Length: 174
Length: 146
Image 1: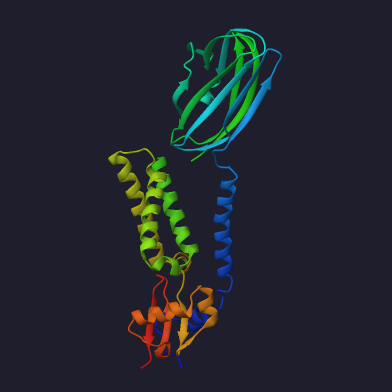
Image 2: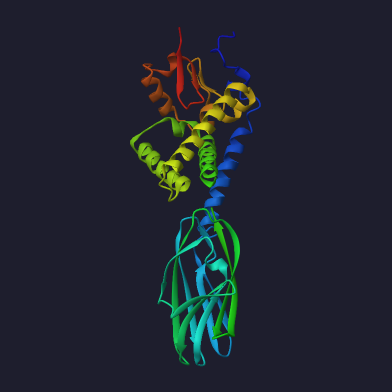
């Protein structure tokens, strides 16, 4: 007795012939979305911070900043200098990847001077006595159109004399 | 350019979510669902337009979503196989007053929900149902016995 409603094929729509795998596909796709969320919980897509450190006899330079951020996100980078010896003209030199495609909302405390040094940004911090600690905060916002991975290079100089340097990476998710 | 890509991605992702979440979950609009819908809309908007407050941005985002919807609609109309993938297929839940346990379970429905839906269709007992079909829209259509 073929009295089923028009458009209904009993084998397909009642007996689910050929559709047995559909729920498994759905579960797999739901699992995939859940996996993305779990990965996000572990900070893979931002914005948990990590610390990178460079230590020399003259000074210790460390940076606390996220390794991954997303478009539009506000975040902070903290530069810490521990001077073991006196630095007459402490200067932080940041390569362009620290700035390019990012909006710097503020730098606190304001550097004594800012300059371009062969395309890099040089922040002159002034005199640091031996045994003193200097903390510099840079507050950023990611420009929404900026995406991709980049290498961040940072150098602590005394005048033109390199004291310590370090390299980090930053991944920007859309 | 990026706003068009973001809008297209948002459309595709929401479409994907609606397909995998399940039809029944999306067909009802209870107070909580309504609130969730508004929250979801706000989240999507932020991801699509971000800090673009321009009319141009609005035109690009809304235009992209409209074009994507028109495209999906055309594919649905033109290709049966695509329609099956994009819309899903109906599934028979009740035949001759008897709930088909396998199908009902597969759609995470309870007998209580079936009875409730039947009542909404002015049917006081599932025994009086000839066919009940969960449509691709998530609605259940009831065809009573003669």
